[in-house]
Image (cartoon, rainbow, N blue to C red; front, side, top):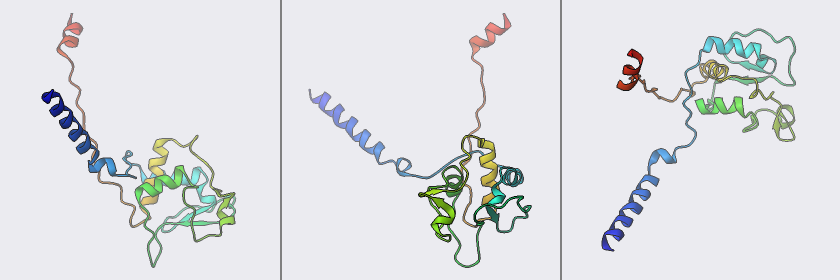
Length: 166
C-alpha cells in the first residue's frame, strides 16, 4: 500500500513539473518555413494588395484600381510600430484581429470586420511565407524567430534491405 502511495505521489509530482514547463506557457510563436521576399513582392502585386496598401521603402507599381483607403505598411520615422513576425502572419490570415488606430474605423472596417479581402482559401502557405518575408524586410522589429529546423536522415531497416535484395 505504501509503495502505491509513493508511486502516486511521484506521478503527481511529474505531472505538476511538466505543467510548469516554460515552453507550455509560450504563446504566439510560429515556425513557418522561410519565404522568398522577391516572390513575396510579386505576390503582393498579383494578389491585388497594392490596391489598398503601400509599403515604406518598397518600389511597387501603382494599382490599376485603388481601394477605399491606402493603408501604409512598414516602419515609419518616430516611434516604430512593434510588428513581429507573428503579427505579420496574423495580419494576413486574420485581418480583423487588430485594426489600425491611424485610420477611421469606417475607412478600414464594416461592422467591426476588416475590409481587407479574405485570402485564406486561395493563398498557399508558400505565398504566405513569401509575403511575410517581403513585409518583414520593411519593419525594424519583425525578425523571424530564431528557429533551426532539425534535419532528418532516412535509415532503412535491415529487413527492408533484405527484402529488396531477394
